[in-house]
Length: 181
Image (cartoon, rainbow, N blue to C red; front, side, top):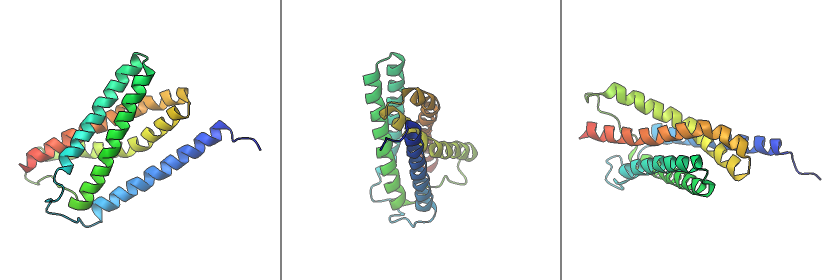
């Protein structure tokens, strides 16, 4: 029996990644908008929101470092930086799920200044985070499976989206905290 063609393997992996990403998105929507918060007062694990912002920021820094390394053709250092970015983003996602399971969704005050620009930035952050998730996973799959030409093509889209999500995650956190202060 012969091994499946690489194109079929890639298609199968991409289909699985898209299915996992869709399931994760649906789970997060359920968690944020339907699931009742276990600690709506936010007294348990109050450190999660600032930790999540820090992890978002660290992922953005690791992405920029990885970009610098790949431009210098230092593939080993690039790979290490990208794994660090992935680890920070994964830890962020775990913390984000925990935060929303415990505390629910934190709303921007109706009377606070700059509400509309905040909501626009937040909407772009959420939409692009949803798009970035499967792209990040596909980019990693292509790299780890040695499909470097395809990896480069997808990474050209993944990098700016992932970086935007990391940076806007920090900005929306700070903006919200200032509005709640």
